[in-house]
Image 1 (cartoon, helix red, strand yellow):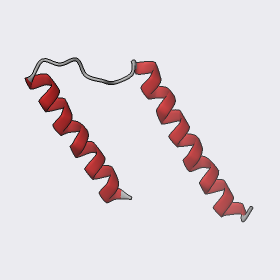
Image 2 (cartoon, rainbow, N blue to C red; image 1 turned 120 degrees about the vertical axis):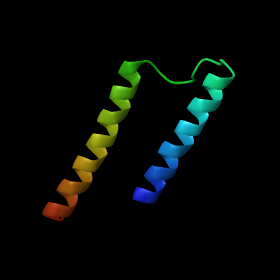
Image 3 (tube, helix red, strand yellow; image 1 turned 60 degrees about the horizontal axis):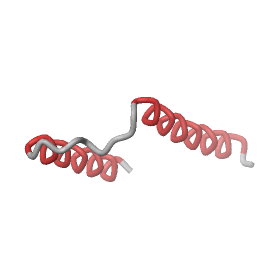
Image 4 (tube, helix red, strand yellow; image 1 turned 90 degrees about the horizontal axis):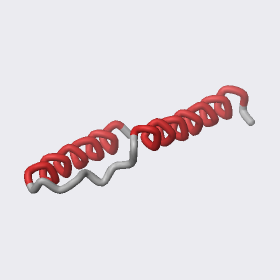
Length: 56
């Protein structure tokens, strides 16, 4: 999973550099959307942890 996360971060960084170099607006959601996406991922991790811990 760490390799996939690293590739995703690096890919996003490369796109950020390219978009900024060509003065194109970044295609990212507002801050609230990013927070919501993070909350969804946190919920997924929490569910998986509880499921493994209590063998549901």
